[in-house]
Image (cartoon, rainbow, N blue to C red):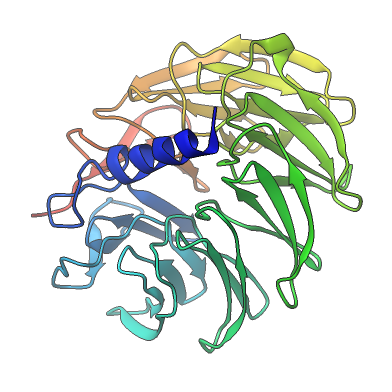
Length: 358
């Protein structure tokens, strides 16, 4: 697959399919970006960020109160106590105070593109990926600390480990940056665009990530060496979402529906099965219980760690983002369906649904 073709494919998929429209107007549709922490749930969708009541799913408020045709939210909000950090498609990155009526503390306006990936934060430093091919490092007082530029848009959530910022690149690379100044430590080349966010495993001091080049790799964090590469003997499909690491296994899925468990140490396969449909969303771990699988067609299933399907439900619409797990619920976002967000308890029983008022 050529880089020119890949760039066209990604533009169509993300700007077309996931926005479900060709213009940044009121008729465009973004997939819901859900974030949750403590007793707070936020949903980025269309022209608003909504704060939901965890008990009822009703909107406590929306920001802004009145729609701005140029302002479309896709990226999930980064929750930080009484504030959230979130970017929009009008090139703005905002810090919003969410106590009581939401109010903007500051707006970072130097980007030239949209914010699609969730930001990351370490101490006073916020790392925000942007479609203008830059990663922006901003402090909590809205001062630009550094930028790092690439050949392609950055759309995945960065990973911050010690003095490193590690980010996936559509330029077939995993990029390691110095957290202090944004300089490149190294770039690790893979066989395809890397859309999935990387995951870190402290036990092996390694990064695990898959690519659209039908591969899944372990990268040593210190040396940048690819310790092993898994392709399922040529049967692995493209990998669009980050893995989970649990019980001495690294578990991930591919677009064709396969769910695969590997040994983090060796890359040898423990098991695999097919969930029965296309998957762009990743696996959502419920600690001590199992994991949730969401198919593109709206099928949501829970599997225990013995790979037994405990329950399966169907939501109206298409699911492209990984479900979000809170202390008591599973939150699933969908587009082109009856509702925007579906909440289930861990037994698969519906708790509430959310659909924005027009």
